[in-house]
Image (tube, rainbow, N blue to C red):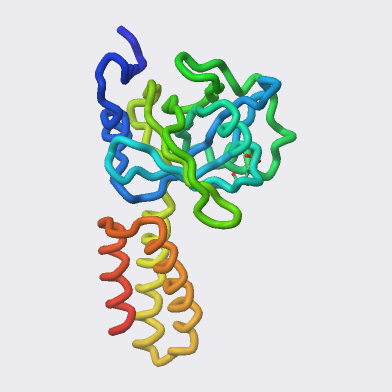
Length: 222
Ligand SMILES: Cc1cc2nc3c(=O)[nH]c(=O)nc-3n(C[C@H](O)[C@H](O)[C@H](O)COP(=O)(O)O)c2cc1C
């Protein structure tokens, strides 16, 4: 019996199957690690946010100054690795020198490597690329193939952590206000305000935004 859940989109014709299995919801940004090859087939890994508007296509907003952007532009493909290894997010963005080639292996259907330690991965090709501002390009991908290695695999999302922090802050704000120390509550309110702003960017129209709005209203009335 195979330990792995392999999803061939060519076979199933369903790009959305993998997104559902990874418990992804539409219009929410998830943090993943993109792996690509450069022109000399040197592997590269970098954290990138992804979202899906329709549970079929995958969208990323990528800085045109990044190696990942150059590689995707040249090769027309990438692998989106799902991992919750936070140290790997650090190493692939701020400590790239610590990365050796042993962390990569070849993929099946696209000209891009996979992270050996990924709990799931999605092999994708570029459908469309368009500049969205001076520094970034929006890239729309189609799923070509995918594999879930850990059956619990789900991509990291900042929204639940920001909401948890906001709930903790809200309980303290309530307490400070009850004790008559509003000046102690103020920096916490400011932090929740900035978390709310992030949520409205990374989880617009989702249940995370709804929950955040409920917390915000409670804080206003505390
Ligand atoms: C959690 C996380 C998410 C990120 N999301 C993006 C993103 O969506 N788009 C982007 O261009 N850079 C993003 N970055 C920054 C890039 O990963 C970073 O600039 C990286 O060094 C680029 O590497 P590269 O030049 O090898 O592609 C993110 C970084 C982290 C840590």
